[in-house]
Image 1 (tube, chains in turn brown, cyan):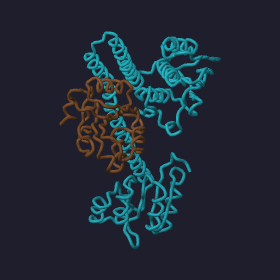
Image 2 (cartoon, helix red, strand yellow):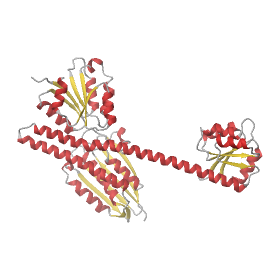
Image 3 (tube, helix red, strand yellow):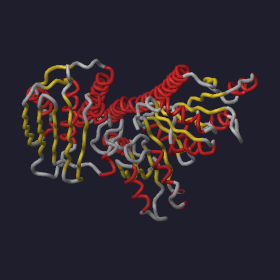
Length: 129
Length: 363
């Protein structure tokens, strides 16, 4: 039996949100998916949560208008520890800029930087480790 | 006080030297004088001088010492030392410590002084120009850097979306949903194509040669809107145009086309789906001297915080439905090239008005 996870998807591209959601459900690793097309909205959603928040995997895009992925991480840092402990963040981006890659690697909250398009098999392996 | 005149500060403890210098040169230069080095520094804090003249022999501080003191703080001003009796060690100090541009012997000769000041000002001007060029270059370099960063993202993102859809489609056995995926691929490819067209427009605008022709606004608007009207997103927008052209107006048709195309497309893209009567009102008043163009819509409107940023390169105001953030930047650049101006007023929920003023290009 495959492990199932709860996901939060943050991406300004409606296409990509649609694709991820479908991929996640089709591959059987998704228990629930909550898509946001603005990082600000996702942050506001998280701020409203308490310690009953389920263990969640966030797939975070980098280049977005308004709040970008790294700015989201800065704000995420301010959330209560109990909440942060329940969240695993993976950055998902088409960036090939070394400054971005280094910054993502340096962040203690970003577990890994995955390149777009999302390879669902790879994600499955990573999450089950 | 004219800005054209060379601004000179002259420091000498002997008042009559200052007076006679003023008497000789006050017509051609903007001259400030003082007998005190302390006061000289205070004056320099308040005003920039092109050339500083100082007497070498002053009580408390020599001219060279004064130059040495102010050099790092006011590096732009060109320094000239006036001296009665030059000994070689004073001259060496003047060059090495005070980095003096010229010596002027007392009693000074009118033409010699005039020459020295003219040359000093030339150096001042050249350095200032060089500094400006360097700033311009730095700006161009920063923009290029940003451009490559954002363009590579905007070029790759739609491709990666297509790959994602293909991956998804490969997992699907149902033929019916394949069509849905193909449609998504089509949209993504279109987005990429729009971006590439924008980049080409940007390039043409930035590097292309200005091609000035007589502008027929009726024809121009017709050409631009015809292409847009048949887009599926155009929907039920009521587009009205009111063109009053009273004279022959000369401009670059390509740039005008870019401006019209971007602003109308934006009005279409950011229309308010909740409104029953979406409209775009285009008004053009063209004389032989000048054209005023307004685009009014009742679309989504622009947030106050975003208003000042929308013309920046790659600034995207909204998350959904938005483009790459290059359209209005190109509009702004094109209007700049035409030596015109653009003004926006907008209220969220009510709509936006873009007003453009462009002068006719004199042939």
